[in-house]
Image 1 (cartoon, rainbow, N blue to C red):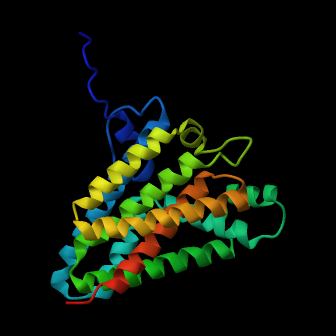
Image 2: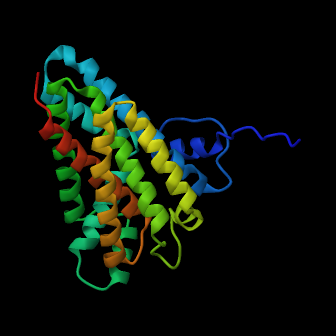
Length: 252
């Protein structure tokens, strides 16, 4: 009878190192795409830390300050990686020219006016949403948008080709990604969201729908996906769902 191999934590380590600044010991996965199923779990961890911050700030009775601090904390926790992607995509969309020019602009490390506007808008909207969530006292539900956003990353990474012929930072994740990675990511996302009850699953659903729409748009506009587009996907889904949640909640 063959001996079962122990479950490797290396894909989880890769997911944590890729999506956060948390110092994680151990070796990375041999196949980077094996980390994709763990993306929603990392999102749950980030969301839990943000929710804990909102809960801890509740004693000060300052929703706006709590929301601003939580928004900045969530961005710093991810090393600003996704916000940087959003800014690069905004600059690319603001420029005129063929696809090659837009891809070149996204690769440029400098941030233009459209990128700055995108960052300011993202942080402002997150602050407003998290402030309302802080005032409502429904801190646990704030975890779900972070889960949905990382699930959306998995969706575009698995279902789209890599847009740059010459390769790039996220190429290993995209080119090695398989359908099974996406299936497992959705299962993990559903499990994590279900811990918040039916409300968690209901909030996850529009995030996945938004991911499908973004996938269609990226295929049409860029012919595929890049690391910047994966990061932008995260920010768009996360911010939209936080706003949706904030509008649905009533302050206590």
